[in-house]
Amino acid sequence: MSAFEHVRIIAAKEIREIVTNKGLAFSGIFFATWFSIMAGLGVADERITGEAQLNNSLFYMGALIGLFVGYIYSGQTYLREKQSGIVETLLCAPVSLRSLWIGKAVGVAVPSTILALLAAAGITLIAGQRLPQFIIPSITVIVHMTIVVPIFVIAAVALMGFAQLMLGMRENMIVNMLTIMLLFGALAMTRLIVEEAEFVTWTAVGALAGASLALLAITWALGGLLSRERIVRTIS
Amino acid sequence: MIEAVDLTKSFGGSGSPPVLDGITLNIEAGEVFGYLGPNGAGKTTTIRVLLGLLRPTRGTVRVFGEIPAESDAIRSRIGVLMENSGLDERMSAYQNLEYHARLYGLRDPRAKIERLLGFVGLDDKRNEKVGTFSTGMRRKLGLARAIVHDPELLFLDEPSAGLDPEAQLMVRELLQELAEARKITVFINSHHLDEVQRLCSRIAVLHRGRIRANDTIAALRQGAAAPRLEVRLSDERDAARAAELLSAEAQTATIARTGATLTLSGNGSAAPEVIARLVHAGLRIEEVLRPAKSLEDVYFEIVRDEAVSA
Ligand SMILES: Nc1ncnc2c1ncn2[C@@H]1O[C@H](COP(=O)(O)OP(=O)(O)OP(=O)(O)O)[C@@H](O)[C@H]1O
Ligand SMILES: [Mg+2]
Image 1 (spheres, rainbow over the protein chains, first blue to last red):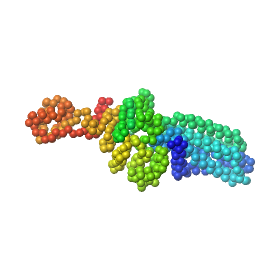
Image 2: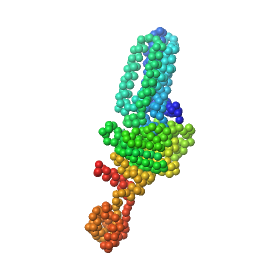
Image 3: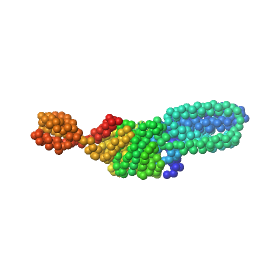
Image 4: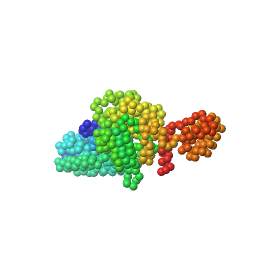
């Protein structure tokens, strides 16, 4: 069987688990809704500033919501299987480590990205209610949400998954705490940046796209460090 | 089928004592091999090395002629049931089997899964989440999971640990059927002597990272260590006299008397000489027995000896 087949089977299983698990599906939807309401209400009700702020909000919040939900789901996917010891049995299957790792990353990134897109739609709708007229996000933001954010989310999720597979439980707890602090820090910063009311430029979108691709490349290369021995020896 | 030569594994620095120390094993196709040893002996570590999950620090391991840590291909010929049954609690029994079947490349596993669920007696639980299952049910489902791709070689790490007697019996019967009807080669880790005795054709006893015995159960029970000889005389008086006589003449045998029966062990317990002496002295012998050692005797001899000499 091809590596692609394996990735598809693993991703499909993770997606199904996330979608059919009430707690998991709910926590993702909860955060996406919460952030979109906050961001939507943060947009000024005046035409010019409002439009700039909406686009800014979508630019930053879109990526951050994807990242945040991806963070929650990756813990439930990689770390949970490691803690429960299931991963050891999976490592005995005729599946390459990279397929296992990437399959899970895809399985987490797909629902995370969908929630980010839904949140973006939510932000646009809420802001539209407040503004004098409904505003469609700029083409830069649409490209950003549909192309850059998915790349960014899958790179970030794969990196988090990599860390969870490689590290012992104590290190993972520390990394988790740092990630959470970083995420909330980034969210706080976003509010300040959004206030600035500059329009989202192609340069900004291009820069984030470049950074996401670089992250993806780095993460892919890091994947070469994964080994069955390393994973088994850091279980519990 | 499995070949380990001088397999040594240590965790941590070079200073730390090895967990496995010079293990040499050879397991042929069709064998049901029991790997015995007390807690912490290194049984699970051995299985992990044989599965390619850990790399040996020294020595070589080959399974199906390949180095396990380097061959993804042999994994499809191997089934595994580790101490943790390897099931996802959030998925149903059916979904768990289906996931594994697909990972092993089965195209349309539905009929196969239904048959396996029947085989382990879980057909009525097919759609229930594994999170609601008891330990016994999980182990049975884990076994079904381990053989969903018809492996030629099956590794089991303490398949009956934590099971009640009824579930143990059921798991044992399933394993017996697998080994006999399907001719699967089985490697079982266990400290459940009774189970091993019933299932395995050959065993090895591992203690503190070394193999202390490796033979068929029958051969081990006949054992190199001189077994005891039981002599029952016609009455207690004769027995007392016999004991006196033998302890005066036979220097090295240890003699114990219970009622009319003497138990001799050690060098002076060769049956023909003992019988000749007693008959010569005019004592009446009712019965002479050389009881076979139980596997338990063998096991404790090994594990205790080593504990003393270590
Ligand atoms: N990842 C690891 N890092 C360090 N030491 C380990 C590791 N895994 C196992 N050990 C040590 O190796 C020894 C053998 O462990 P192992 O799990 O193989 O024993 P076992 O025979 O399976 O025992 P049990 O019957 O309790 O399952 C133990 O002393 C254990 O502490
Ligand atoms: Mg063990």
